[in-house]
Structures are given as structure tokens and as C-alpha cells.
Image 1 (cartoon, rainbow, N blue to C red):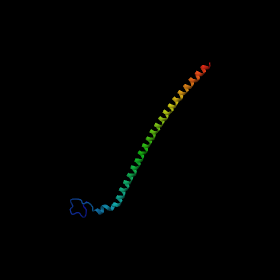
Image 2: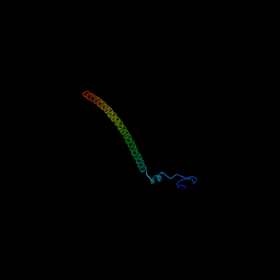
Image 3: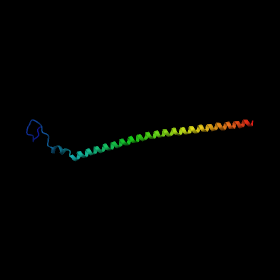
Image 4: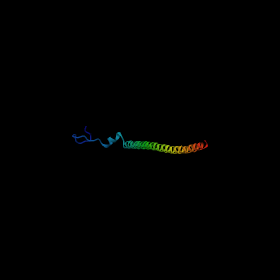
Length: 101
């Protein structure tokens, strides 16, 4: 198709710039680009929040494990001390009872 302003009929001329901008104006295109950039920013923020929450969950799980192991070690040490004291007391009472008999 040859444009009416073209001098030769051998090639097609591109339509004037005014015709191209009549369909979609530059402010509309700018607004669409700004909306896309804003949506990308929101998506990145959601991704950062998700990754941060996941990392926090992993840290809390690790802290819980460390706390459990510390508590188990503390209880085991106290239990062993109690058993040793019980043995000492039983030996003392057995020696007293044998001394009486």
C-alpha cells in the first residue's frame, strides 16, 4: 500500500507520526510503563518478605533445637548428680543399719 504523500510507487512509506500516536498517546504508554514498574517493585518486595520469613523460620527452628539440647544436657547432669547423691546416702544408711545389727 502506497501512502498518499509518497513520491514514488516503488516502496511503501511509513505513515506520519501523527497517525501513529492517534491510537495510543504517549502519556498512556508512560502510565502503563509506570504501572508495570510499580507491580514489579511490589512483586520484589513480596519475594523479599517471603525469603525473610522463611529464613526467620529456619533460625527459630535452629534456636529451638539448641534450647532442647541445652535443656536435655542440664537435666542429664542434674539426674546424674541426684543418682550419685542417692548412692552415697544409701551407702551411709546401709552402713548404719549394719552397725546396729
